Length: 511
Image 1: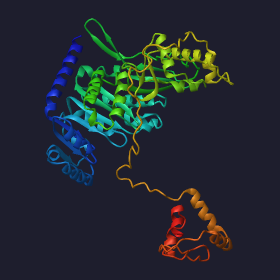
Image 2: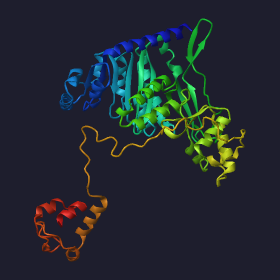
Image 3: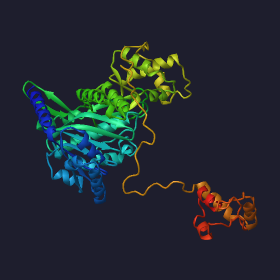
Image 4: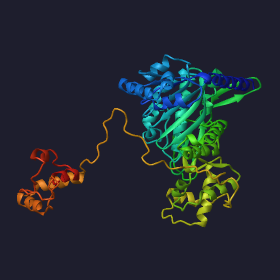
């Protein structure tokens, strides 16, 4: 109780200190590029004292300075453009910044160690990761080397990516007797972004293993189990931290399919959002809705976040559950109602419109699926398949699919709003621009085939080509030369230069 009271007083003190410092908040954008976000921080966020906009490329920093100057004297007064390695700046500025914003291309893993040191007590650390192929399990070894966790490629992979990143930040913070409190963690399109407050407490660092867990995933179905890394035992006047007991799986084989297990993690299993923080964001958003062009999309995502069960890690995907047994999927409302009628909690997830986040054990989920299949039969040809083994078991629970209160969303706010046209990431800095209208494989094969034909056939093909218009615009056809070449403004050298190209080059030859 004394430790909890001490923790609450430290968090309140850190929040009060952060509020006081927000009167003159100091912000670091470690990879600023054009400086657009730094300019918005300086001009749109009240109470900002200084924004350090840093980039490693000197040419980019010159462009950034021009952008800052273009936005007026107020931006120039508050923004300081730096050209250095972000890690060096953060290492040389311990406990300095109220907000540290890191938004790299790819992984932020190399920046986290210095980032957790440069944030003030109770300050905000904002981190983006775009290496979703690694975090979602397509490149598991790379994820392990970057984040120290093994991902599992399953329907919940986007939320797992968030929890892997949070666990990685926590591990870096613990080396300096610091810990994190996530206030908002979101998976958006092609990237994830987390917002965490950073505090200092040696006692809280001991709790870190209790906030992490390993994942046991059935190889034959969507069942999964979580096993905490550490455990905490509290006696009358003592607290003891020790490794957790395991494994948490019911048996050596999956009880539903008899398959083996995949083991992933460790991942963060504490809440990834602060409900009060999210409610405050929504209230601020509604108050100034006219300022946000994407108000509907932001409001929908924050509302989905607010609806999530905060203490339940990961989720099931309804369509994947039904795909496993090759059954037609019920409506999401009916499936959630069956879980609520069975006595369990359920919600959605901002990461997937078909997510089923629930505290119901996996055997209850599969019993509900079996009851649904009884009313909507399927044809399983192989009884030894995973689908056959799942449906061969008789359900111990009689599912009730009548509509239950809480199965539907609470309001009419659209949760998943599509992106506007021409939206998305562009070419990475330093890479050559993408060249369009390049010759396709079929174009090159057609050109090669024409070159291999005898001259007589090439002449016949040339004679069959339509008459080309004179480039002078007089409308008179140009004279055809043997082999199909036209006389006109395009010289022979230019034609040879474009030889082997696609339709664009052919049009140029006959224009």
